[in-house]
Image 1 (tube, rainbow over the protein chains, first blue to last red):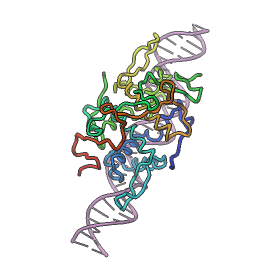
Image 2: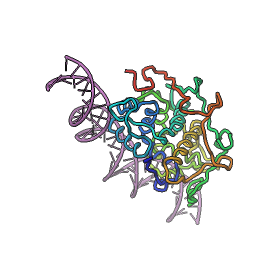
Image 3: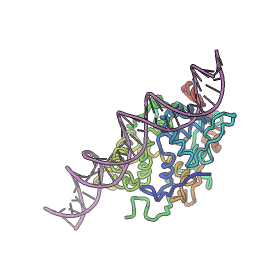
Image 4: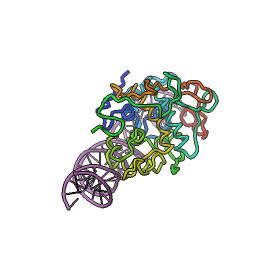
Length: 158
Length: 158
DNA sequence: CAAACTGGTTTGATAATCAAACCTCTACTC
DNA sequence: GAGTAGAGGTTTGATTATCAAACCAGTTTG
């Protein structure tokens, strides 16, 4: 695990893991690159085609994703002559993020859904559930516990 | 609902709702702005403080989020003298996306989690479940059904 | 009426982005 | 072994976005 981690206090605004996450994968091409690897496209040219990203941007992003511990480079399993990009545990763990985006996009962002995710051959209808209590998660049941008391829920406590 | 929707085919790369979603909320500040509104910060200056975004960028982003149908402007409920930014249904529906990012960030992106989400006063332990079959969603149980046959799973068909 | 706060817009310097061309290395063809 | 065709980037030069800071107009507040 090489993953370079970020101290949220060094970022502008409210200290928040989502902001730190976006610092790593919040670039225009990063999540699409991870999506391609998730789909089984491990080679540079495949990822370039799949994302549509300019090659220099893609090269830079793949490099930073490797540094962040999201991807790693190793020989393709098919005895390939070139190294391929593969997901680390952290990278695989981005699956839920990408699926959440895709679900939202299908519902709100596109004219017509270009892809449907099947779960055991039926359309996936995802909801978030809390494993601790087994209950479906609703926004109203959530509260935030902030480490830094300077940042309360609403605005900054002066 | 004003939401300007995107035809995925007009974007570079593989037609994908996640890519379309990122076209709307994939900017550096967009999701953080939505997070602030989700936290109850409806005023421009509050969102500026909470996100740490430059004011001109924030103004531009809020405008595009309103155009996309993620936010809307209306008088603050507290009889405020200024209009506030409020979530539409589409905006509220970004909650799962932001929480997925936050969960990933807590686990992989930060040195120490600056915030913990409580669900009914216990720490939230989120998993995705398919409502159709009630089963917990694992990556291995998922397949993609693509509308455009030119884009298969791996790379582009020719 | 002055001071301060609101929600921005403008400005001017800096940095990121892009498409296209280029380069190196490996492999295959003839 | 010369020629061609990838793969995986890097370089280049023009364009665009980003940023911090200053500015401005319309409310309140004192």
